[in-house]
Amino acid sequence: MHFAVLDWVIFVSVPLVAWFIGNAKRQAGTWRGYFLATGNLQTKTVVATYFGANLAFTAIFLILSEEGYDRGAWAFSVPIFWFIGTLVFLWLYPKMREYIREGLTLHQAIGSGFSSPSLQRWASLWTILAFVGTCALEFYGGIKLLEWAGLPLMANISIALLLALIVTAFTVTGGFRGVAWSDIFLDLTALTATVILFLYFLSAKSASALHFPTPHLPIHTFTDNIIFAIGMALIFIPFQFCTLDSWQRLGAWERRGKNPSSWLLTGSLLLSVCYCVPILIGIYVRNIQIAVPIGSHPLKVFMDYIHLTPGLMGLVFAGFIAAVFSTVDELLNCSSLSLLFDTLQNKRVDPQRTQKQEGALVKSGKLYTAGFGFIAALISLLALSYERQISDLALAVFSGQVVFTLPLFVIFFYRSSAPHWAQTAKFSMLLAFFVSLLTVIIGWATGDQSTTDAAPLVGFLFALITFIIGSLFIKREAEH
Image 1 (cartoon, rainbow, N blue to C red):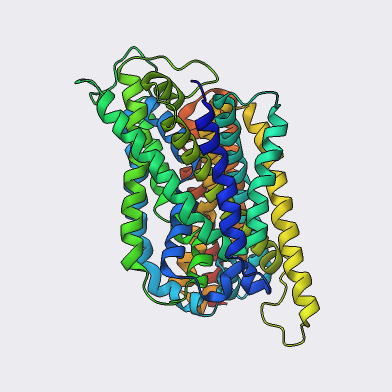
Image 2: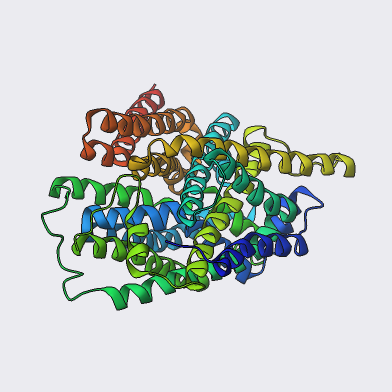
């Protein structure tokens, strides 16, 4: 894989253009400007943040190509359950809308529904851990990209810090409005790369490319794949209403409270199609029986195999790095929002707050954004030590979102009695988070992939059992 001068010019232009757009569209005079674009985001920019946050490089291009290589058609459970999750989100949106209209975040909705500021604080900590972990995974992918491109004379730590500096610069400069407008450009660049790869896949595939994987390469058992599919269902069906960025973009939308189905269904379908491209690439590499060397990935093997020409190579890599930036920029902004107003619980509306205090709040938000970016960069260096288990690391991170499924179910359907469930909800989230993480670690230690794949299922079951036990205690107290 050789990077020509033209490729470098195209590649380097991505962060420069993103920063220019973010700077031109900034609106960060108040905290609502910095985090919510004062609630005036146009639909096209809201769609851009939706697409950008969910078309990631590491979590989608790298990991789904790896899952396609390892599991074959079972990997399609991810886009299938993603789209089903969109339908579930739209079904539940009327329950969610009342909180959106009040301008509440995910964690504030949980805290308000259960009448528990403590629960709001705990919920925000889970999100911050999950989001910073996701940013770290994306920086991991960025490091691998620059390694593949042959960036000279730079150690991994230098690359990680450089990526953090670049994405933090245009995220802090533009605030959420700048991020949204930058994401339009970044999304189009990532989509261009996806289309190029798909066209090369169509031209490269042989007559047997989509047949069932040959037995000559490692293959998961049927039980492993069933557990994997169940885990993907538990993660991706509730995923869109369990993530803070979904609430943030709907709160920033100029048509806040309106039904988003007009753009969400189209965007979700397009994302699902994009998710299929790396899976197809992984299946193709597997079926032409190309071994993936240790330290490499099916995606890189495919790109070496098809011999991208100068210019196209730059466009594909530009699309990949755009996917990194468009995911990280919003998650860093979300993490900072959560820390300020959910963890530290600063007042959203304070008539006594002076303009100087408002400016200090915005500065704090920018500082936290930058801090989370550099923490994620350092964590990404640890991820490099476990690159053969990178999909397992992602599973651990995404399983952290499962913790909100049951608490949200309670406040959506049993809001009047939700305050009685506050302690139960807190313990269920605590168990789901740590049990999911522990299950992944046990899977690594024992070398049992099925144990690792079961992390979302085990976490959900522990949360469900906690709720059942809690309901029994609540019922007994009511009787007395």
